[in-house]
Amino acid sequence: MRYRENASVDTSSVRDMRGGGGRLGGGRGLAVGGGGVGLVGLVVIVLFQLIGGGGGTGAALGGLAGLGQGEQVDNSQLRASCRDGGDANASVDCAVAADIESIQDFWSGELGGRYRPAETVYFSGSVQTGCGGATSGSGPFYCPADQLVYIDLSFFDELRQKFGAEGGLFVNAYVIAHEYGHHVQNLLGTNQQVNPGETGPTSGTVRLELQADCYAGAWANHAETVPDDSGAPLIAEISQDDVSRALDTAGRIGDDFIQKNLGNGTVNQDAFTHGSSEQRRTWFTTGYQGGSVDGCDTFATDDLG
Ligand SMILES: [Zn+2]
Image (tube, rainbow, N blue to C red; front, side, top):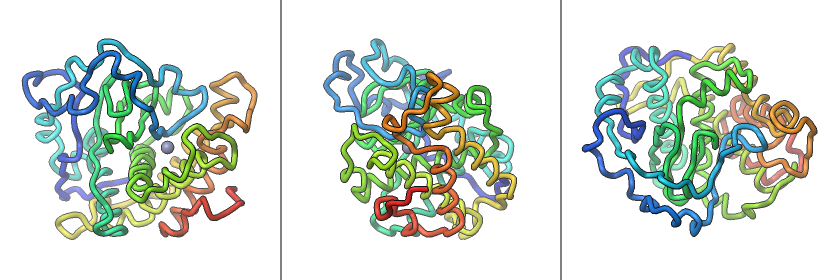
């Protein structure tokens, strides 16, 4: 994937909370949750991850004492270093900011006034959210309570090292687009049709996840044409190799793959939360080839692939 060299990149949808300077700046970081230990237990935790099962979610969510310190937003470095598409081609931090912009431009076009932009929090290690405390072990996720996407960008290394994925800028974009798919579901009320704890291969939980994969594919179909604020697309090219890499990743974050390779070795369909590897590939492909949001109605079919 290549970004258009001269396209200007807007980092205003990113809240950089990775620390490392600027501790006096920002101050918006603790708007949610209040940061109090003990509060976490009172929050009903419903959030939407990229991965489920026994894989990257070992140290998922819970009462993490001491969270909240140093959680200031400091976007100055990101803003200074991510100015254009050339920066996005050279830096993952900037590329993800550009992805977010392209993805939200797409959804604004699709949904018009029904779409409300959501910000993404870059964090490092652990973070306090409207859905409780989280660590990097949760993988990237969307929290409906505060309508924010959260990601520790080191997850992209984990995808390659732990999951064996090929990786690449477009794989990263697929991950982000999946999480924004959950934001769209939240705006449209789709997630409210589903019982949060439900699992299994045809469960509402799995249908939501597969729809988020399909939405990511639908964005990718339009990514080279969707205009940014200047009227030109931010993304210059998505290659066949990029798409193959995304499908490779989709196959490695399926419940069966994770259970087999990163869990206890046996596949238990009843515990599925995100769909099988094949289902995830299928629904990403459905979105990517069709380019239609309506084609992503995973609730309207008995054939989930
Ligand atoms: Zn998800």
